[in-house]
Length: 320
Image 1 (cartoon, rainbow, N blue to C red):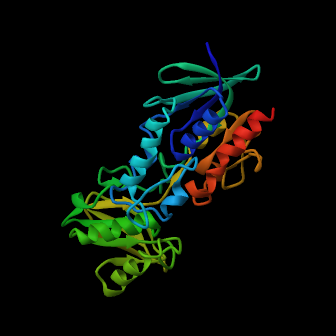
Image 2: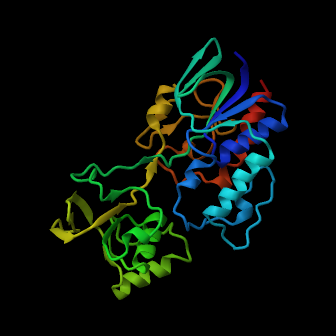
Image 3: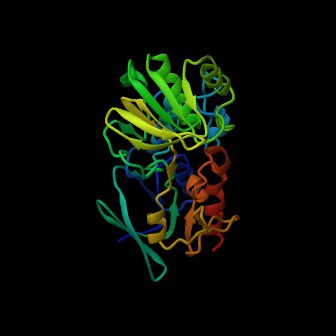
């Protein structure tokens, strides 16, 4: 069996960037991706706009041309999938990595379709696959969604949106404008400061005028077939009629996979151990790239500030 120089787990923007860096340095490599190319972006809301401008989303110096100041989901899909085609990226799609082990300095990677050997391993799996569960009664009801795609299914429905981040605000505004009766349940005392600056005044004005109801310092405690129960700041409980719950409570990396691969996770944030100058973990020749480096703090790394990981990692590999 061929021993690859690098096997990359995850075909998102940073995984693609690692592949391009390997190509430039004549290293043999393969990306294993459990879905399609940039699978997480594919599952973003259909009309999502990035916070970053196009040039900050570029990889390997390849221009990202966008007609709008802030590119959207479809433009990003065209850009990254276009690079994969143009550069003939070596990638296996719809193949899930099941197990990673190391034998005599060689990584053995078992997937849903095959087995591979590699001298170096890069994990660039992002964080969008595992919802941050609330662990409350009724969370498993069919009416509860942890992913939001588009507003049309919620027209004329009573919607509860949980959270106050960008995803929650986008869901609240879009469903409201398609005729939903929207109530937001928010743990904090206001809309998150991280919400896109051109959107934040919109949601705050809709709340102020009463078009969207919002309960701050509040927490959902139970979801029923036709209602939800929440408690307010004073601990008093309230029950309101409800058809759908959009639980925009965030997402987490696959910590079990990281642990099973031998990577140490530290503290309450489950921060993976890695060298900040090489991205190498406590396992020699096993590297992390992209958002997965941040543990539970999924707002620490973005495409624009983790693009450098590819060059750091390949530089470390070539130096050995």
